[in-house]
Image: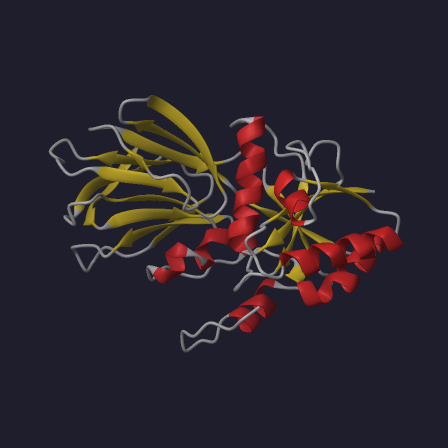
Length: 292
């Protein structure tokens, strides 16, 4: 078995965790291919193509590192390609909703990986088209969410929403989130959106601080094509981002088209893991957040 490893070198626990992973992999004869950042932790040279020809991609960090791993690989493959990989995550961050286990469980993780007893879960992704001001049409992937938001003026933005070509409503708000089930525990949750189980087959459209109190989160089928348009009389700049990455400025009177990506992201989970167990472990229902 061959595993490509992507790591976040800014995490204080990264050196210890990476050495532990390599030690456990060596026990089972698992070959490790390090990306440039992971290799730098050990003072070695890695490869940009760490994901090619491997059986598994392992992300060492937190949820942000998992997202960076997916986007790093996706940027090389291009939109519309099949992210033909299985990914796992070792959490040395904070929440770790997307990760497989914590660094304390590395020996157990390696044992299950060798034995083939880890579970696989498919996560729906978004494929997004937008028109950036001054650069034209662009395409993106998103694992968590797409966000349209106000610019530097502090004024509300006006966005019209359509589903499968049918007008739904006019939003006047700080912004708008379209989130996957995986993203329902991220920005959308902070904006008052619902928690959505991964297998639900839906997306959520969630306004950020809407002007109208009747504008609430809307859950729609993940077969829907969601079109978001800046209103014709909209003079305020609308910013765009996917998974909290690069922030772009939408072209005036343009639109953003969001649909389910053709292929899900395959995520490894521990044998005794479940979505609801993870919710109980990561969130207390009074709104506080527990550690990893």
